[in-house]
Length: 318
Ligand SMILES: [Zn+2]
Image (tube, rainbow, N blue to C red):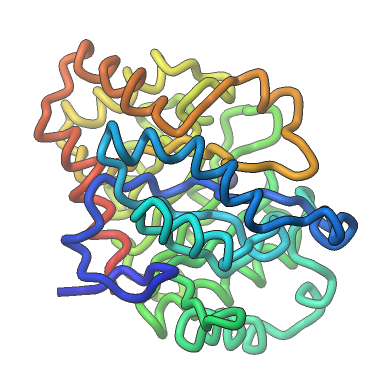
């Protein structure tokens, strides 16, 4: 059986349970951590995250989250480990990069050859990160709206090659600025698959910013996963619209290509952006509010289980 690579080590995928594949334990943009180094308190951050995440674990059997933050978004695998140990939740860390326009791909990487970047990703997956050598279990790739930045394509190709070499899954950030309907996800998939990656190891993220069923069907028919991973109010599509699209994908027989998550942040340093704070999300939201919407819309329990438990196992094992 394939393993999921968590911050506490490898586990068989059938131990993942209910899984949200795009969340954040600590989100700290750019230099937030280094600029506030004196105030950066991992123990206090762990307390804050656990207060939010704990009820979802205890009351809703949330068993695994993927922390979708690459290094430049403040990835802290040691805080991830402390949260994992305290709550008994599995956490999967990410290698990869965020989009250039969002403060991603530090210059040091923009100027490297694809082969060097690929090797770095492979090392973070196979040898690990930090004092405890935490091995990353996903590759996060992100592109701007129009995907014209050459550094982003380079990172996508390096990530795809690292995925092909290691079997590690790819998760992406595909939302267009302003939430216009574009085909960014399709462009991402074209590049990833052109490098020979198995489409069942690819999750196109933030696809719920593209409320077009035909477009979603075009993507899932190519064998990848689409993630409705901003559940909880962000974007032009309200949750009722998200639930309708998920229901439509289930009715058309594609529940086995859909993943559900919130892109929630346990901690955002120095403090959450007003838009994020106003959304008022919390880790239990998906199961307390969104899953009932799916049921009301006629989505079967079998399909809900498939999206929350079965699909993450298939995506995250390698
Ligand atoms: Zn995110």
